[in-house]
Length: 328
Picture 1: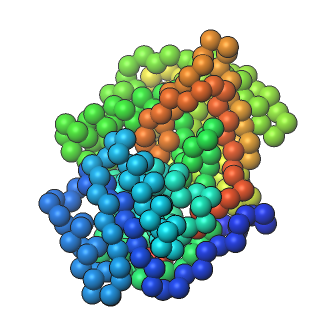
Picture 2 (picture 1 turned 60 degrees about the horizontal axis):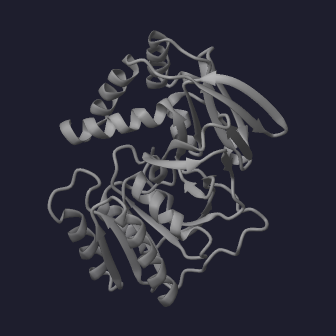
């Protein structure tokens, strides 16, 4: 399900592809289920056969991702190339943070478990297919979200949701990467007692105070559709979508997860959701730093938290031909 958004009127002009750009590929070797050099070999075979220049910058996740992304941006600037992120949502997040605002074209080779960002724009999770599509791609200006000074592509959250992600990663390390492992870890996490947050939300001229266990801000229509929160109109209006709820019991939390699995979360009486362009989240003067999750990665940010839709769009390479697009 490709999802098109128009560029903001004051965004910088989109880069123009010549068709002979060098690809500077940040490859997270810790992403996905591939064995050995399968991903590297697929990328190399396709680009070498097409006579295209490329450089693989390999990194095994962690803090080295950001330095690898900076290196790719520097090389692409110097040689008018394309920056490519190959990995899961966290890898795409790290590289996009370095690319946004540079005017450089950005491409992805998705390798993660859910791949909401890539699937939204019809980019295949199959490495060979996605690499072939780079050769004749077009640029689409893509909306991103911002939390303080960091970009997120799919979602950002605080409270219970970052805990779910931390526990899910621990379970994946132990039992492997699959959606069933992710679901089981969520059920175990929700069984434990969770602290409530006292928050003040300032958005669109409104102020709302509530106690809640989590706040999730979405920037991806496909993910929202899959859990049954139908807010695509808000996203098309250059908005983000906030989702929260009043404090819930363990049973009610299980019920909310069940509705999400059945694509019916939007029908839950205790769910609060709304669109916005800018929102400030305050949690009292004692909270100077807040743990948040962005695209599956954990960060500590200074309070208050400022969510917004930046004017600048991400110049994403997408398949030219609709027949090449992966269907969500």
